[in-house]
Length: 240
Image (cartoon, rainbow, N blue to C red; front, side):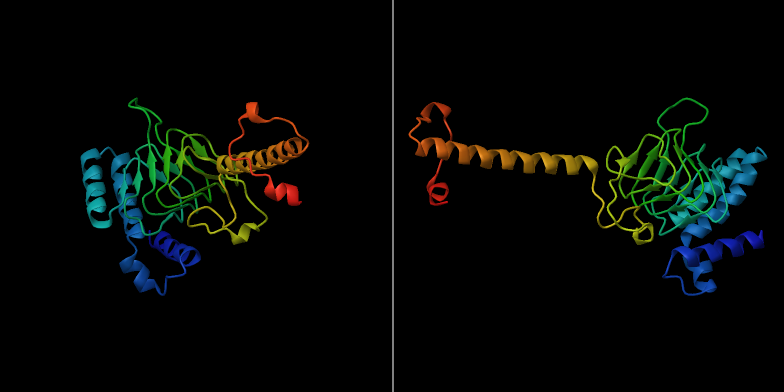
């Protein structure tokens, strides 16, 4: 047990530059407190002490602001930073070296018994406020941007953002430049937003071309009244 606690403390240094010393981590990191209490609750759950397990889970939520169902399976070196508002459902499965930030929900989308919650493989990062819903899988190294809503599997080493979550269009930054707290880099854009911007720029270019053609036709004496072109000012085009 103590070896696991030491391992958890070391993992904090790797993922939180604000961590100063072991005593501070032991006393002021509710994410760790929630994980340690969950281990006890999970043991009780597996030995069929269901009520006691749920009661310990409720106490942990009251103490830390983090709700982890005692049935959830959690791997090694799991880290919840800040932690407030995190909810992890009963059939959720979390691999090794995963990181969750505040406001994350690993929730279900069905009332049926059985697997209802997500599976996170190793080294998954989920940004603040994100909702990962249903019996889906986030494969090794996947990242979820803040406030995203994920309802489909995420492939290995991919980053998803938006509602519903879509794979982010990553720029030229190196992977080490990505701020993992929110699963995004400074130059990432939602692909839908990029498409809309591209269409808007294309429409403006077409409008400018139409204006130039109309001005040339007007200068040649063609009657353009039937075309009903609003506010056609050819003064600049004529000077050109």
